[in-house]
Image (cartoon, rainbow, N blue to C red; front, side, top):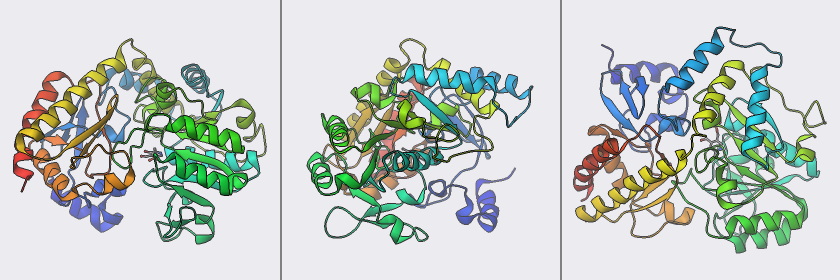
Length: 427
Ligand code: PLP
């Protein structure tokens, strides 16, 4: 039998860090990752045969659990007809009809292959549509690995960003203005100064890449008003929240109409899919209807569309989101109770089936609060849970996800593990 360790050893020789996406390498929590052999329902099994209750869900897509028979059969049927055509195919039309029906703000849509592609295209479109060059993003929000997003606030005053990765030109980073999330006054001040140069503001409407932080009441509405007032496009990055926090995404949950939205994860049912869409007059600027260029060899791939459509059918089951919300609440309430019992300061955030665990005694509403939490304690807790067969995201700054396959027994098993892991982790 091949062991996790042996595979990681081989992987490290040939792939940077041994992985194809950095967080998988466990650098933040320490130790070595396991290699998954198969997945089903709420579980992953590693190559050594160990079973884990999975709260990562492939980083969000697996909202109906792993390897769901409905999605799997749709893929099996689709592959009978070929893997890629490079011409339009009927499933793309059904996909566009489904998305635009579920999200009224999305009047037209373009399919791509990842969330990163969707956000990169959305800001190009915002720039092309407005003829302006600056974009606004929020510290701690993640929009994929496009150059324009790998930027954080520079020292000193709010505004101009500095690259967070070598290879991102400072000249490009200058065009990205960064703001603190959940601080409307800061956004108002920024727009007062730079409003006429801002093409678009991109935000995770529920932040999920600095753990899980919901917007303060009225915050998204305030941003909507600012963008309208200054002629900038409001872009909701719903790659994580889309079809996750509600069937209609965060825009439905909070009643906001963005100009553009980006999607990924759930929309592909586990296949590499992204999408962006929004107001018809804006989307009509995209080639070949308009002059803003964006293309993709595999975009609208028939197998990926079949997986995504099967997933979108499942999540339209009546009561689907209420049940995920109930079970996630069972988990977060239980975790907090276990923390009290263990004498550990912990709070949780939750929006439907998305949750965050914070080792602090505060309710976390900002990036600064999230980064001030006890990450060493999180790391010990993470490993304590892993040892007991529960896989949480291997970083204190990632949201957790529940699926409809996590039943009350699975949650009870998780809480039993948490009781022991918390006691072990406290020092
Ligand atoms: N936007 C958000 C909010 C995300 O969470 C992610 C990925 O986690 C992305 C964009 C990038 O998507 P992808 O990893 O599919 O490129």
